[in-house]
Length: 332
Image (cartoon, rainbow, N blue to C red):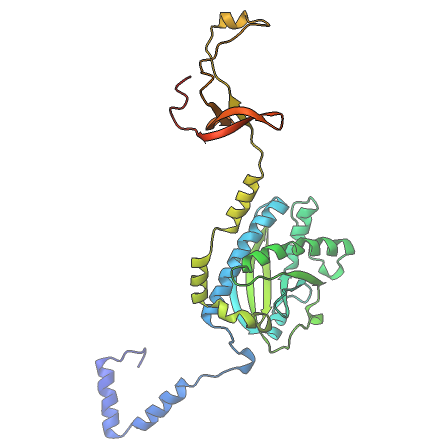
């Protein structure tokens, strides 16, 4: 017999075997029960649901987009960062999976307890640093002997990622990420017990012609206080309550600080070019507007309001009477 569906001949053969005693029904039940038993590895305890993992993936997809925009501007070259996977594994397994010499940025994320790791493949880190120094983005993996200047440049580069990590997480929790350590040897980094469950979000990263991975390791102890907020129900409620995107608010704030020219138009007149060329000191030009008519107030070159002239604090001023409407310039 092959597959899960039996043919009629196989069914007939099975019934015949049961009726003749060649096969025992109790033995079949026992075999079926044994097959249902699944081996559970307590070292790989699954402490996050699929729903919560999807929420974490969604958060870091936003983080990847923010980082893509930031590094594209900083490095002035093609940058693409995207989420490749999100898995929950023991901390020990994460440490074994990364290179023996790599770039490790350790962040604290108050008010949450614990620390998170951003592991950056050396090829990616060196390509970024080369671009920051004016190069073509060439990668030279010599992480064993990082100079003090290289260490400073790399740590400063990834320290700027704190703002975007904060922005990506603000729909769930207000955190204040701070880069506290910069390490190159994962063996010297023991943040949690080897069997502690961590969530590892892997980001595919391309800098110019160099590709590699950025891995973000978040221990369970960090996420434990906010696990209820990682459910789909919380996301849906949060989206309903969410106001305008932060980018739009920033844009509005910037626009409100912009200076614009405002002018009051006393009136207009039409004269011939000959009269214009003959104008001299003391000549008077008659405007086609009565002194009792309101003046047109322009923002830039666009009519926006009508008002009346006057004085305020010994300075010429104009009082806004109403908004300008089509037809208000009929006197012209």
